[in-house]
View (cartoon, rainbow, N blue to C red):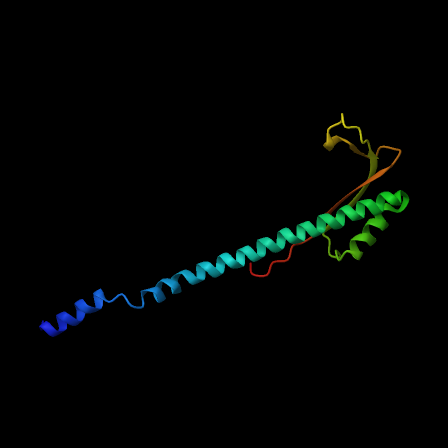
Length: 130
């Protein structure tokens, strides 16, 4: 092999220009994938928070009109933009505000006199990139 060919080959191995382009091209799909995952997860958390607020409002509306609790809850959910629910359960019951009772046991479903409503809803989440 001639000295000229050897010097060109060794010069290319030492030339580090352009390596950032290769590294960026390899890292870009990973960065875009992480950003897409972050957008989807943040959207799901935001939708969950919105649905929880709407369910709370529906429970308050149902408790205000115990006799028509299911209708009031459904109307409140629709007024708050939640129309596509997989399931909606409106349960009448009695709530005892006694601090000596653990919080999870204060609402008793089906116990009269009715003074509270429990609203449970399930709705599909919206994903943009997944």
